[in-house]
Image 1 (tube, rainbow, N blue to C red):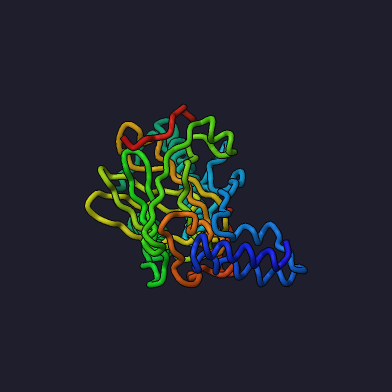
Image 2 (image 1 turned 30 degrees about the vertical axis):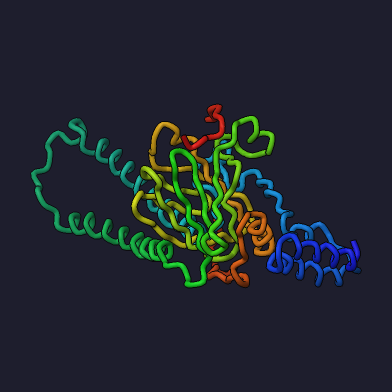
Length: 330
């Protein structure tokens, strides 16, 4: 496609979608000049109305077969929490279990009635009591400091310019509204097993419509329960926030990498509680803008925002399907 053809398409976009939508073509037109006047497939991806759901990456953002620990993490708090678990808490647990098991075996062997027929009459041992009180206190302090830092990071207030997304739990489906982009709403129902397999998505976790957000930006995630208590939870993003009727809960969400991330309602909310999957799709800002413009009444909320995402050097490394038709919300 030549630049002349691109400009013609852009004009038609202005007539069909209005000026804000047509502005999404500007980056593509500029980059086309660097490629000899031709657009690549990447350029087409940012066209209004050209949104195509991202294919999930096997093993990323979803449970894996024979998994023994947490899912790989793709948010700043998730990376921090997984590092804390793998490098602090897990080793303390192993050390305590080995020590207690060894101590128990030693007591059984050393102080049984055959090896020690005359039991000691000692009732107190000051040194021993100081040790068994002091060591647990030190262990708790070692865990306490990073735990409080992690809690503070998880419940840090979103920045003023964060994009707002409101997730509403219904019996039994999710709906997502975008107040900053015209207030349009997306309803998300579970996909039948056959359709999920056809799309290459995990059964029982796939949904017909996803919650789409920009990658690398702070999201003001709000949750609300339309009827009973639900819970918005995505394990690979280390994110869980209850959706309670009569109040709005809020927490910041930042996703480090583009991808598709799966979760479920994690609060028992009724007969179809197990059929409320959550699918979050994180896209670069231009593709997110293109997705926004596919919805009636939507608008682009200003320029791309920036988030407080840790630099790569600062981030610590992260180490039963039942057939169901799509939930109708009845």
